[in-house]
View (tube, helix red, strand yellow):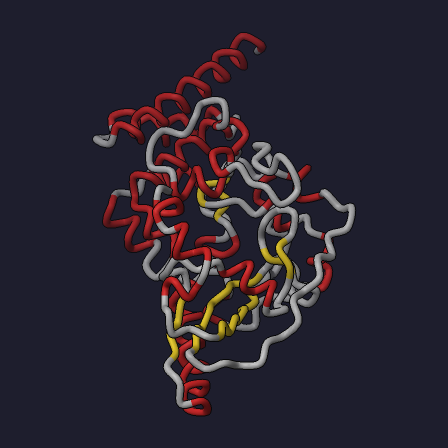
Length: 306
């Protein structure tokens, strides 16, 4: 993620990105789950996909809404506007906190009194000088549930994240082999991780997403690891059409699936992962061999106990 360092100056101030900007309008869209997003973690033969990726790509959904609001702002002020949904180096979460949408919790994500941790953010920059809202107060208090819930210790202190240990980073952004010492801690999380978000006590005020395009697709709620291991590039693209999962590509995704199979503790999945040992992609092949070695050792151990 070298782009974070490369765009540091532009992220520090929206006016570096667009000198005409005078105001930032921050909008949030609720994507609250319809159940406990951690339920799948107790089902090791299925894959757990982060709540935000179980439905239509939020970039498409949110951008359409932003353009509607931006058009009204431009009409009423006569000033130029620009719309952003993860499309430019903007600090959406600090801007959202300054706009009063919520506050950055100890897990570094935005928390809302009304919607908990389940919000997508988008920003409209306007050349008009609009009246500002009061910043949101930090209401985390002494709570540290999110820090304690992180499987890999990626939250070493409040408001700090070590992305090198974050499961979301490792399964989505990281292209190479995942460090072996972290693999057992990933469990069956094959795309992202919701643990720190899901345990936030402010989620008691959260509600299920009202936007139908953000309702989970049944086939992405608890997909079979064995079935996912069979995906070639065409099948991967077909399954994840319109989903943010599609952007990481088949190889990186199947690498994650192989690691989840290795963590399943179920030797019955050996036939599913064994063909991946010969995968043309070396990262997939290595992850599959790691999984096969773990399950074969377990199978041999169970055989000795019989």
